Image (cartoon, rainbow, N blue to C red; front, side, top):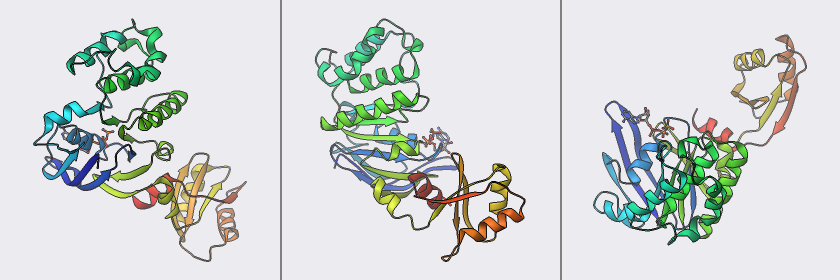
Length: 300
Ligand SMILES: Nc1ncnc2c1ncn2[C@@H]1O[C@H](COP(=O)(O)OP(=O)(O)OP(=O)(O)O)[C@@H](O)[C@H]1O
């Protein structure tokens, strides 16, 4: 296994940031940690990259124990933290040179690995990192995390604050790195990105809710979801929440996602009820579950 996490717990005084977390990541797997802010993702990354010690449990990365063999891990992993990983006053090239030097290597030595990403930021190589766009900063941070050819790459919310086009490009890059035999653990609060991972762990309040492939996670969702819409969406949500048969109600893009407690649910009954609540232009149609729906159900 590339990463093995066994019953890890970590608390900060009163906050239980991680509670009995266990999972494994296979070599060259793209594994996603999916969860909202405060779920414990950063704490887990810091433990696995040897920057923080867990209160309980053990973990290995690239075959090394995160406590006893921390120095070996630091040479074997690349870490792109969510915030502050670049020196804002150094240029693109200086940042890259700096990270290469501290790992005892050079840009030339490992150019092959970063080439594809670096060519996109090379035209700005003399620009200070602080003056780059979000997407470019993220590409530079990825180059810096890769410069010493790590076996395992840790990416903490790499696409937060990045535009949709750059986000898409970034995930395509991750797929290519994976083909170069790099194991990737990536965290994201964006549920649509979860589908791009080989396997995901849904995490909330320091606990893992489920681990599986994105397809299997959605497949296990047992209820029929309905997209519901009406002229007054605010009132629609309130009325649905007040409906005695509702199982779940939450906004989902331009719709409200609704599930019913009854097995013999007939949407006509719901339309009638919503009409009695003075709602107009009511639309109800079946829709397939997404990872976000599964998350909402498990997090209930
Ligand atoms: N140094 C600290 N001292 C006290 N509490 C902390 C500390 N670091 C994190 N926490 C708390 O631990 C919990 C998990 O935080 P963590 O940063 O690991 O979550 P996260 O999923 O990475 O979320 P975010 O994206 O907001 O960083 C949160 O409740 C957070 O407030």
